[in-house]
Image (cartoon, rainbow, N blue to C red):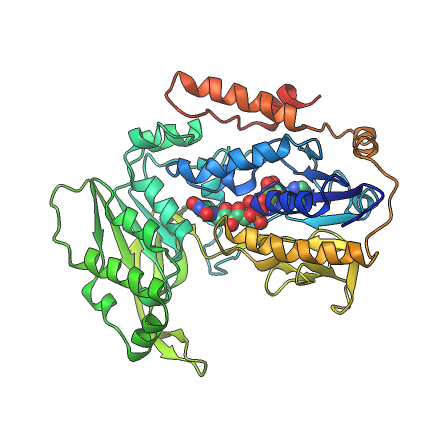
Length: 463
Ligand code: FAD
């Protein structure tokens, strides 16, 4: 593209979607572009830092690629800036020819059942952010020392991550970048049993094979799956025929179901299918903490489109549970002034162009990518494919002269933030935090010891 003037893009969110989009914008617009990557945290990389499990360190290697990108002169990182609080979306847009929303999904789908608000009932997101040292949840009141059974609702990889962290030998986790408070809590853990519960059957589970196989092979952990759960309906067989992934997941579950009990297991993972949570019950009438979960037994019923729905049979079961984690999906929150699809919990868009409130016309120079665009599904790499679609729209709009006009600069934007008292942590600031974290981890043989207090990070990183 030939541009006489440098185009300025602001990307809201420094997770994979934000960084992949930044990379593509540099490729498409060459030297005539500047990209500011803005994040509400003083630390970049979104869920690569705060979602990916601590015992999956290799998955975090993508950070090296994002770091190289941040060191390009055409890119600036502005951390500790919350769009919608420190600066409105409308004001932000005045500083850029195009703004790309890549702010992920930072809320939860709710179980919406009685007892959900009891103590020791958390969303998986809260638990994950706690063990990964996210500043918002470092003080989550989690005490595992008196908790023997944990119930997790949901049949996806996030549920498996939570179960693995609870079941794994603490000494192994102690050599990862797990937050110190979580490491201490896990060292004192009394958890002997984790129950994973899903509404539908093993063929409908959203696990991926690698993560499922890993948990079935955890040292010292016995997996229990009732034989009857592995029985297949005709529709199950058709689903597996159409999807090799489903077949592989089913085969791993079947192997685990049929494996003989080891006899030396210290901890147990029970997988329950065809169960809907009805209610979380307190430990006693006087105690506001969860003590058990009541479930309804389901059966599968084929829908017209061939998929299968869980339908309650009226039979009930109760399981003891000292902590409950609901892992039934993340949700994106609306930012003021955005057309938002509250049913799906995503920003309203067409191929990545954010729509106006009428749901028809596109906003000028406003785009969305990643989990805020497609909902909370897909791995890190999925966001690259998604970023390609959104970037195509931006390139096309630039060609057609459909971007926002602006005279602003990154310096002018920073000055506006400073006038409102926002202390920006730039990439150099993050590198100071990073170096201090790595140094703090060295004595404990950890790749890093994460800071979990925003003020500590601002003291180190704000220029
Ligand atoms: P995010 O990564 O969530 O990034 C969003 C960013 O926006 C965050 O940095 C946030 O601080 C920032 N932000 C939010 N609101 C604002 C605001 N108002 N103003 C400014 N900034 C804001 N994928 C894998 O490939 N392998 C794995 O092992 C893996 N493990 C996972 C484990 C968990 C628990 C979860 C939840 C996901 C995992 N994924 C994994 C999926 C992967 O993390 C996501 O696909 C990816 O992070 C989504 O990218 P994103 O950029 O859309 O969102």
